[in-house]
Length: 148
Image (cartoon, rainbow, N blue to C red):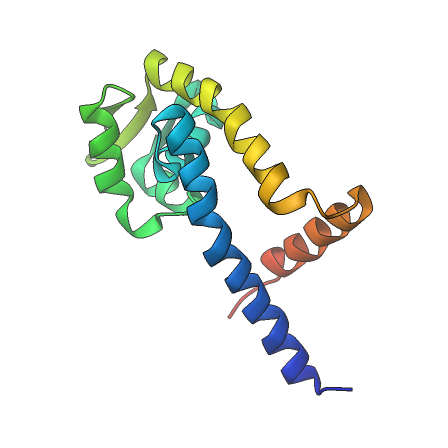
């Protein structure tokens, strides 16, 4: 039996490889069918789930999965397309809110089934429901573990 360190490193490597392999495939599926890059979808997803469809830019940066380091640029691109608006924070002029527009919400809702279908086809199709549930539980447990 390999050492625990080797097992952990192999599992970590497999997770990174799956991510690196599937994100471009999912991006292509969503982009080809909706014209929406996956990074934009990620921002619209978080805004659509937020109360009143808006988040402070700093909160949005913490929530997005695919493009944390470039959230400001992504939001500016979405603003240029009319999918998101920016509002100055009334109590703190240094911070701003990103707000999903009606057009952005409509595009998100149109893209969501495409994204979910791509996840099923490219990620989950060879797994049983029990395996998907177990994988989700394990990854959430790792994610929720205190760091530091």
